[in-house]
Amino acid sequence: MAALAKWFAPAWNALAGRYRAAVFKELSGYGLRYDDLYDPLKDEDVAEALRRLPPDVIVARNCRLRRACDLDLKHDHLSGEMLAKQTPGEHYLQEVLAEVRKERAERASLGTQPAYTRIYY
Image 1 (cartoon, rainbow, N blue to C red):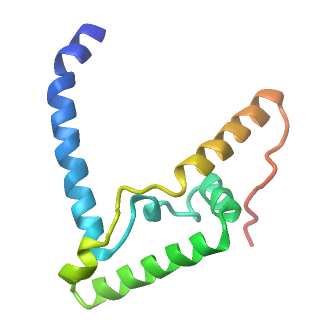
Image 2 (cartoon, rainbow, N blue to C red; image 1 turned 45 degrees about the horizontal axis):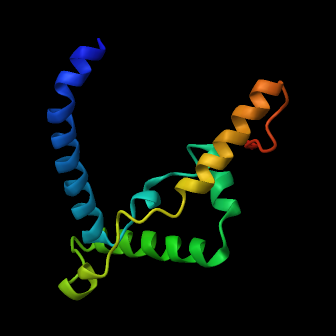
């Protein structure tokens, strides 16, 4: 199995690079970053990670999401000047999310309840 994976790795990496470039190009057209695609309603860890971020990062994220929704409803993309300023590959949530998931795994290994849970009304 490892030999097969090693044999296909160059082709897989080439395809992954092309896919990543295509995704980043599409995100740039709407002014989004990759981390903006994480949904806090679907994943409690993402919601907790977003709570731990500074307010200015949250405001910037919300502005990017609103602008993307507006552009999508207008069937438009960012202009060339704004498009050049976009950084879809710059991550702001990954480190905090990894920390939250590590804490959750540690709590699970100790057999304790998570520190945060979603309440459904």
